Image 1 (cartoon, helix red, strand yellow):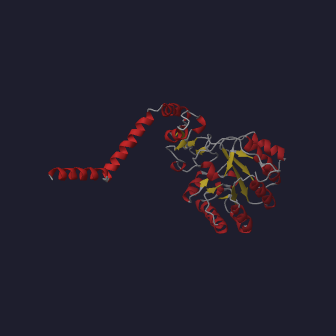
Image 2: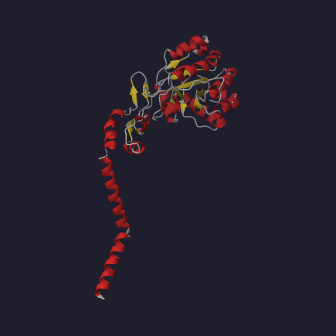
Image 3: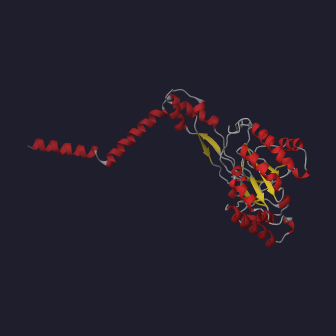
Length: 328
C-alpha cells in the first residue's frame, strides 16, 4: 500500500511539474536557447555575420550647414541577420540577393535643429522634389497636372492665399490629385520688408484659406521670390511651418525654350534637389521630358514631405513613361 501511495505521489509531482506553466516556459526557453546556440555555430549563420559589416551604411544626422542651412537626416542600414538566415537556410548557402536589411535611425533629426530654411534634401537620398509656386498661370495648370498624373508623380504646390480665394476649384483639383499644398503668402509681398505682425498675418491668412478650401493641413511655407529674413523663418516655425527654398531654379518666368529649361535643370540636378518652377508655357511643354530625364538618372520624385523624411529609398533606374503604354 505504501509503495502504491509513493508511486502515486511521484506520478502527481511529475504531472504537476510537466504541466506547470513556469516549467513549460523554462523548457521552451531552454529549447530556444539551444536552437540559438546551434544556429550561431552554423557555418551559414557565421558567414552572414561576417559579411554583414560589408553592407552596413551609417545613418546621417540632420545638421545646419553654413551655406545650405537645414539638411534633413537620413537612415542608415544594417543587415537583419536573423531574417537573412531564415531566407537562406533552405539552400544552406550565402546569397547576397536574399539579404534582409533594417533601417538605422540617425541620432539627430530635423525637428531637433533650430528653425532654418531648407534648400535641399539629404545628399545621400536619391530623390528630388518639384515645387510649383502658384499665383498666376491658370491656363497651364491643367496640362501640368495631366503630365504629373501620367507619371504618377506628386509635387508640392505653394499657393498664394489670394489666388486660392479666387480659384478654389483649381486649388481643390491640385490636392484632390494627391499633391501637397504649401503656403506662398497671401499677397506675394517682399517678406523682408514686413513687420512681425504682417509676416504672421500673411502666413495665418493663407493657411486658413488653403485648409478651408482643400481640407488639408499646411506644413510648409515658401517665401515669395525667395526673399526672407531670419524672423520669417522663426515666425513660420511658431506657426508649425517649415521654410522651403530651392537648389535648382528653372527660371521659367523668363520664358526660356523647353530645351534651355531642361538643360538648366539637368546640368544642376543632384540627390536631394528642390527644383523651383511655376505654371508657365515652357514648363508645361518641358515637364514630360524633364521627368523622364530625372527618372533616367535613377532619381525618385516626391513631395517636400517625402523628400525630408529619413526613410531610405532605392536608387534604381526608374521607369520612363511610354505614351504607347500609358498604364505601365
